[in-house]
Image 1 (cartoon, rainbow, N blue to C red):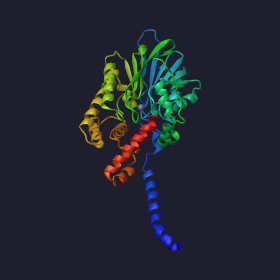
Image 2: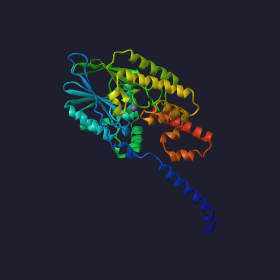
Image 3: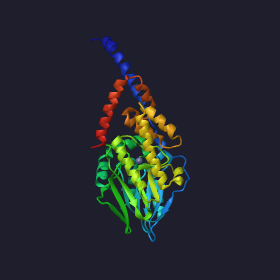
Image 4: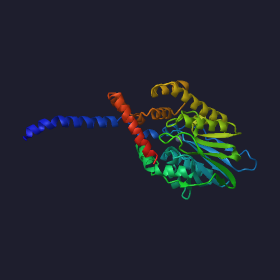
Length: 367
Ligand SMILES: [Zn+2]
């Protein structure tokens, strides 16, 4: 074949290849910027401290919250006279360093970091605390530890993409702690296993542990309750939401002094009451279900919830959860350029592709 003929055949292919490559680069450029995970301004609302209600108990709880662009993760520093246990670590390197400073300020020895459910936003920062406080034990209920440890490569990959240099990686391993009780200087901390809450890309029965501290009348439900922000409803079903709501109703029957939600904007923490947190969580789930049942599209659900709750933070949880519920997998990337490109493709093709991508993702996250 003559060179001229080869060039004649190859040139349109080269043009198409260049077009596809450029399109890929253009779409990739529309993704989220990892710099956004580092706060430039800080909320100066002080971290609240809750004292024991049982006479003679030395226990107290300091509620650390990471900043708005660090998705306001709650960490509870439960202190005795000499020791401190941390329930939930924040997501990023930078937020975990600031939590480490708070722990240092207590002047107490950090003995345990307890993980309530296998999600990276409450697990990864523990690696920074481990570096700052060698000897601390990282523990979780056996099923939670197992799922979390299996997901480490996925968690690390996701964090690298999302947080860049601010990712707290490599994720640490959590040891299996098979007990319903954790003691702090002779005082009891109860661990209630197999509770239901947010699952994201996991299965609807993904395990959560709720912590109850009798001396403080404090409940730490983590991502079973939220305050001042949208809740992550992705991956839930009618059945799992029914269990979730029943649990919250049972907490409402308790005599509680404080309920620490998994996420709360720091500016809202001053308004937090035990009843307020439980009420917000229960009515949010009810309203979300109503929006879900009366809508045909994810955008409709999101619009209704935003109208219902114009002042809430964490809208990303609403978008993410609703895209998961409608199996709109490509939208989980929050890339407007990708969405523009997809809008030119046939709807039925996109739907099938999204469904397949979702099932693949789900298998990966549930080894
Ligand atoms: Zn969370």
